[in-house]
Amino acid sequence: MIQLSKGFFISLEGGEGAGKSTQNKRIIDWLAGQGLEVVETREPGGTIVSEQIRQVLLDTRNAGLGATAELLLMFAARSQLVQEVILPALADGKVIVCDRFTDASYAYQGGGRQLGAETVEVVEKLVLKGLRPDLTLLFDIPVEQGMKRVAGRGEADRFEVESLRFFERVRDAYLERATADPQRFRVIDASLDEDQVWQQVRHILQEKLGL
Ligand SMILES: Nc1ncnc2c1ncn2[C@@H]1O[C@H](COP(=O)(O)OP(=O)(O)OP(=O)(O)O)[C@@H](O)[C@H]1O
Ligand SMILES: [Mg+2]
Image (cartoon, rainbow, N blue to C red):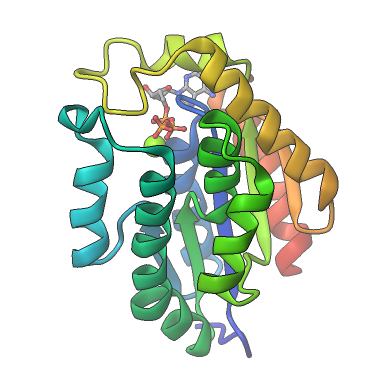
């Protein structure tokens, strides 16, 4: 096993059907194949408490949940995940791969729900105290193409029932964050086929981890 001195934190971001979960599997397998110790997790969720909060957030019966309450629940789940999973894994020198993280709050609550980046930033500072991923892979895909991929996946959750305009705002907010922080972000053309997307991801991982 290769032991990193400080761990490495990777987040996967992007809209519905961009292929995050699909590429996540390949990333985990490939990193493990390189001899790295990998921890896989997701948001909202990843701990018992955070998964319970996830249920509240995704439940379509909670149509009346306000945008600010949604933001705070996201960060409550995130806080627990950071404390229980992410910080310990980083301290142990592991690679952590998280399916969505704080940038998703900028995209969905800041952009989609129109709370604005400034509001999200206030909560981020309070909860995360500067903790950010070392690398954020943004799987970018035209909204309608992503939606087509997930159509017929069964019942839509509380986010999936949102309008095209909502998801356009989510996409724009993600791209804006990527442009503002090119050091941390890598934008991946997720509209291509699975293998072509993976080639992009693998090159970035090799570059960033020096493998
Ligand atoms: N590059 C690709 N080309 C075509 N179809 C793909 C590609 N990547 C994934 N898919 C398919 O699209 C669907 C959505 O993929 P996936 O679940 O990985 O997306 P996701 O980004 O995790 O979505 P969500 O945000 O809803 O969790 C799946 O049926 C998957 O098999
Ligand atoms: Mg997914």
